[in-house]
Length: 316
Ligand code: G1P
Image (cartoon, rainbow, N blue to C red; front, side, top):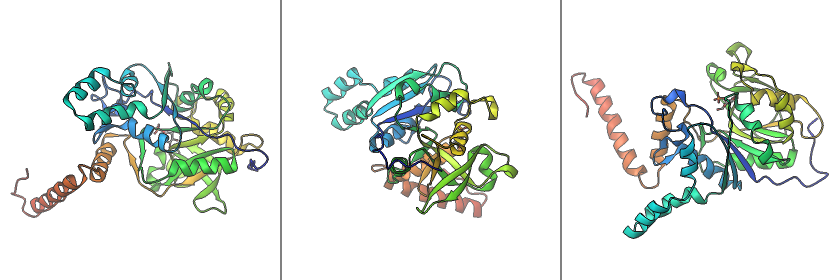
């Protein structure tokens, strides 16, 4: 049975953990000397969207789990005095505000993973910083639209029900092998499910459902003790999904896992094709560039259609 926290007030959530130690091999050579988290999505590095999402949800203590070649992340979330002075001297207030913003989103801390032993191991590296409070984990490959309050809803579910909470999204069955997949039971709240089982990247025939974990978690700190005991799984890596499977099957303090089924706007930046789609979709939503970009895009698509109809036509 999922323990409830009606007996004592839930611990407030203040900390977010952002694993950012991956090598970014899918984006080589762009990521040879630049962390993949720093690739621009329109006009901000991908990681800034994630830190802004955490800050909106009230999580202003952010721990990034990094590795070698990630110094640019520390620089991005720090002040840049020379640049600020140059912009100040020019009276370029707009750009000044933009470059200061990333340094004022919260208290950002860094710890290195050391060895690439998997997402579960990356989360375990946060143990000393997080302590014994529930905390959020945000994976940088998934961007959630700022208008969709997924993390806020997950935090509310965790505070009401205890245990851990994962974000789920329906995906086409042929894509389940790319994600952790959940077996679920309904609860009396719409789009909140109880998780009865989790499998990391199952073969399509073994997928318990087409509900995939997307990169948002709110975790009970008891996950750390479980991660310490979790052997390498899929891909010979210590998998967060495997530790959560243990929590889902267990009872007692901190056990139980719920899922929030997300039906909003998610932008996947995990590989080159998805990244390009994310850039186009977010460019259309951009406050300053959106209208002009959308108008150009419509013309361009019309031009491509015309070119298809008249094969000899050339496009710009
Ligand atoms: C990780 C998790 C997986 C989850 C996915 C979401 O996999 O292991 O369970 O579904 O993130 O993006 P990765 O994409 O890092 O291989």
